[in-house]
Image (cartoon, rainbow, N blue to C red; front, side):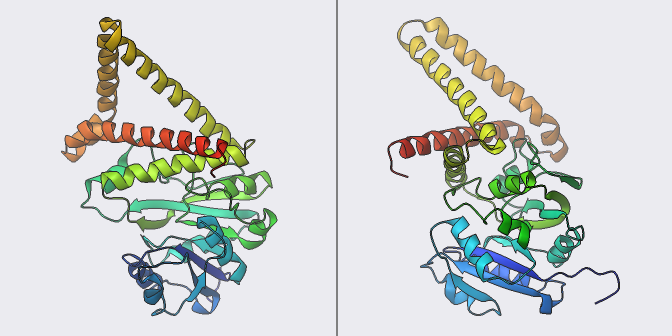
Length: 338
């Protein structure tokens, strides 16, 4: 090992389910990692795929495991239990990693007080309008930060993503791994908050970069954010005292109140008071115009005015899907349907 090089034993865990269309490219990129392969292992945890994912994985020198339990966190926990690494890194089956990914992660763990490292996520499909939008939106669903930071808590708008994160093993074991009751969304953020409460350092480093194949159809994006909302509701149910839960409940309350007000004004405007309808329409147009103004500089610099027109509408659709997903899951849980 070259002098000064820090090479802890690292396990890369990849939860997958029906990822035949993408897992090969991820594994190809992992095979090119610049790291001591005697101190690196790759584990793919399969959630009972039916599309040939397992057969593709079996072509590579990696360990293939079957998920023990249900859901993404169950797959992550399966990988942790069967891994050997001092550091456990996670990515997803629809990602591509650069050759320095593991090495850059490792460097951040030199300080023994660091329990978690998260990095940036950028869209892989640069020819997709929706993929570019997900990177450029002002309301990020993936990490967006430009400077390295260390803290012992999660900060609003500065958060990691489950497809590009790593934990120190003994830190993760101190919080009993991932909570398998939480899935759909927030499943990756909850343990990071818990680590901070235990005094471990949380590092966010933009040099730790991966490329993710964002959703490229409108329906897939809407469904994804609907599920994120469902995950937030499960977090609210099972981790009510957490900061993440308080953030989500504040969002859900305010957006539900706003939607209720819009529906009330719309109903009154259509049935009893036409002036209210005109007021509502004027207010919504004004909000949209303000939203457009926020994207105007971006649109002009890229010479794509469609961004100014469509990004606000996509923001609204994502936010609405997120809210409805949260309300849907709360309703299901209250009715005892999980």
